[in-house]
Image 1 (spheres, one colour):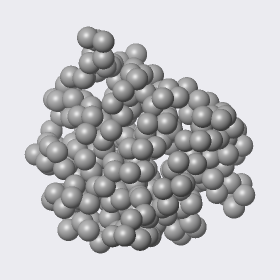
Image 2 (tube, helix red, strand yellow; image 1 turned 90 degrees about the vertical axis):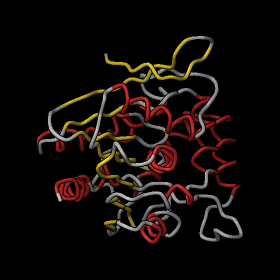
Image 3 (cartoon, helix red, strand yellow; image 1 turned 90 degrees about the horizontal axis):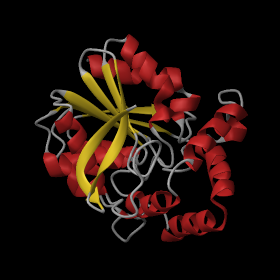
Image 4 (cartoon, helix red, strand yellow; image 1 turned 60 degrees about the vertical axis):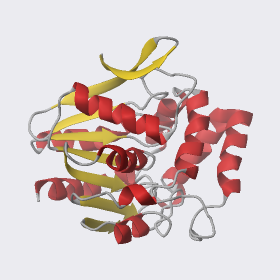
Length: 278
């Protein structure tokens, strides 16, 4: 197993992140969504490696096989972890692609560290620019939704994750595209996460405003979103990100739920490969 020691510490020990590194060619970092791990990218990793890319997929702190500290699940720290990965692997001309919550790392990384080491960026079903409904963000999601997530997780995390997994892919509408077995596999991945990280990351993706970060994007950026996303609605996120970015390629997956990397994987893979090779 491969780990990177970050520059963050807890109890005088560095936080270690698990990662996998496959293939050769231009590097691509894949950043997973909540509450999964790098394993959610299974159907993208093979395609990207076969298309000639070096693919690095890591587990966010608190998830998968990475260390699970008690504190620090805000996006400044999560972006710092991504920065540490890029520095420790001495990557340049790297493309960073984030799914859902992972899009927040992409945005905050560029907001804090710029694009000197980057070639391209990607936001898939991603949470930027701002999820929370406010006076200046009326298309956002009510705070009660995020607080409800936390309440249900504290009551019965396993049950919440099962129900959330079905909503993740709009299961009743996509039974022909994704199996119950795949949902169960995703459930096992999600249950392996730290309960504390699962809770704290709701505050991170629910209440973090990335609008200033998006203003600092000066590289080609892919925005992909399903128009039937019930978790991160397209009107809240994908559409607004595209409008804010100066150099974006915007692709809408018709009938696509949040988990388009599972239900529409061939379509998503082609979009990503075409973008990276353009």
